[in-house]
Image (tube, rainbow, N blue to C red; front, side, top):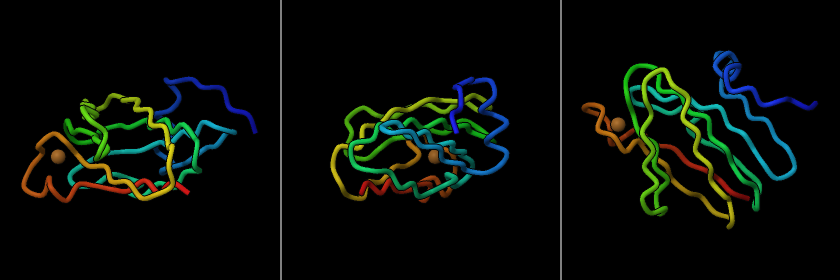
Length: 116
Ligand SMILES: [Cu+2]
């Protein structure tokens, strides 16, 4: 099924949970961030895909950073959809984390991207 990208509608989709839609080489991932978790916290993508994360912070500002990608910290403003693109070039497991201090358990706010 083909879906047209309409940013304003993405908010609605998030309510249904972390849905993942795929096209040949672009994979869009709806994600939410709140104290102290990303949902989904684990994302599986095919090698070679460009992953487009659409991330909404629900409770306050957070951040999203893919470890090992220099200067990749993206600020997640509460209630806004942040778009982060990631090229999944090599198979492996990569970590992402919150990069904006958000409270006591900020350090546990992390997840993984599995490229295979
Ligand atoms: Cu944080």
